[in-house]
Image 1 (cartoon, rainbow, N blue to C red):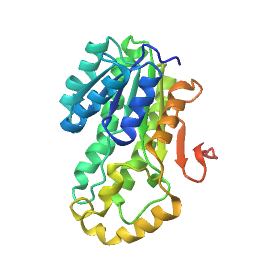
Image 2 (image 1 turned 135 degrees about the vertical axis):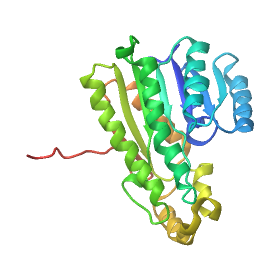
Image 3 (image 1 turned 90 degrees about the vertical axis):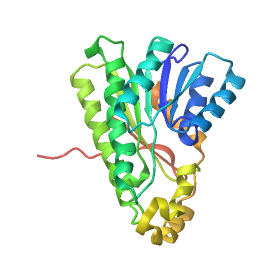
Length: 262
């Protein structure tokens, strides 16, 4: 899919993986709506992007993705109104908070589901739209669980299951929307550094040394490589329901599932 003139919405887009994805999209001449809860970070991000790419190619929208009404009206509808269309949705916003685990579910799973459904409203043929692509961000935590982050792990499992089921629904319903999931290992982002704080991890913070040992063993990725994976999911029209893994040892690769036997 050629990206010039296409419009993308990226949640958690002002920093980390989201910011790297925004920059990759803009380098490909897409217009991007940067959605993030952090106002200061978002304002700074927009200023830097405008300086690099020129004004008019991106917008910053402050939004808490757990607020469904705001996600619909402030993020998705404003993006469509501003740029006239929507072609790409990256549901990337995520947190790692075992102390307030309900919030972790709200950000990491519930908002991904809402973002997918809102993306379909703006892109699916069932709503008279022209199609598009959705990427939901999971994690290698869905394949390699950690005692340090049980609820985070559960949400990332959920993102994979939901995405694969929705990809099949898109085919059966002729939505014209490809839906894929991306599972990076440890990435050098603010989220990664939050795992040492008791305010985030609660009683599981006592396992942080085990977490650090695992991180040292498997290495830490740069956000730019994750953005490369996202761009492949966006541009390769053959990919739907794909589960992309990104690790230091294997780089970008795909998880395969054995078919269930009768």
